Structures are given as C-alpha cells and as structure tokens.
Length: 210
Image (cartoon, rainbow, N blue to C red; front, top):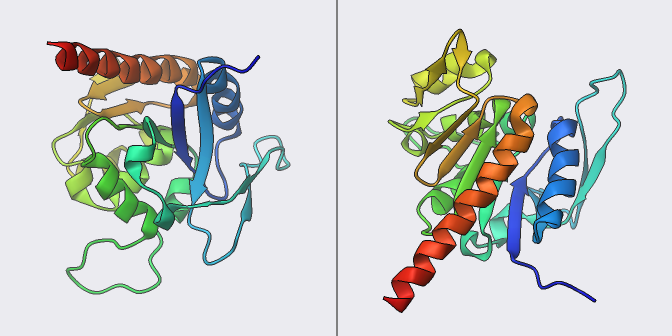
C-alpha cells in the first residue's frame, strides 16, 4: 500500500554539504509524507555527484543530483531548503560579473523567484544563509539566525540577526523564511518547517471555504 505524497521539499545542495542535515532530511521528511528532491546547478551535465564535508576525516556521504535549478518552478514545491556547511557558498559563484549587476548565479536567481512565490516556505540552516547574502534584497530587514561564523556577512547584507543569551537564536521564523542556527537544532528546524507548511495550507483551506 502506497501513501500519497503531501508534496515535495527541494533541497539546494553542492559539494561540502553538511552530512548531519542530509541524513536527517532523508529520514524525517519522508516519514512526514514529503518527498525530498535535491537540486543544484549541473553545468550542462545530466547529473553530478556531490560529497559531504569530511567531518570524520573522510567524505562519508554522496548524493547524485539530476535536477537542474534552471529548469524548475518554485511553485512545484512546498518548501525549499538551503543545506548547511559550505555548499551554498559554491552556489553563489558567477562565471562573469559586471559592476552594479545583481548576482546572476542560477541558484540565486531561483531564490529570487522562490521568495516571491506565494505558499513556498524557504529554510536555511547554519552557513547556508550565505546564499541569501548574495543578493541583499533577499535578506534585508528580515529577522534571521545563523552560525556565528557568518554573522558579519548576514548583517552586512542587511539581515537582522536575532540573539539569545551569548549567541544567536536557535530558530527564527519571519514570514515565509525559517532559519536555524546550526546542525545541532536540525530536528527542531525540520519540525517547525513542516508545521509552517501545514499551518499555511490549513489557512488556505479555511479561506477557500469561507
């Protein structure tokens, strides 16, 4: 017996992704009825294989990605998550640049569309807020949290980092944007991400029946 999918959660990924988050995503989201689809810029290839951070001295996890970020529509997803570690820095890369021109990296262009698509939640965790920093319009005046390493980057891009005690907050929700501090809060992050998706869907149903 198969259970009908509640929809897809897209995860932007590249080389040097966080393996803890990767493993947790693959376990938790399908348990809640959501498909996980990994997305990247494939540079004209039908697929690319990316490895995780060598946290224990070796690359323990690999993912084969076949979904090109240029070819998808944000509205086909319930949510888009930027995976942590250094992967999102790699997705900011532009082949050519011009003074005054906004970042044209495919993943950044996709995020602009996603942030302006009603009903699609966007999640970042740890270092992955780096990708939004590539275009200050994506993060300016938004309340967020992130790894301590990139606080300066986030604040210079106009983000309002939320602090608690002697560090950044574990989790922050600002409209369609859900941000987590680091992999240590990934379980809380995933639970809240799903709750926010389902709360919104419930509001939409109530509105449609009103």
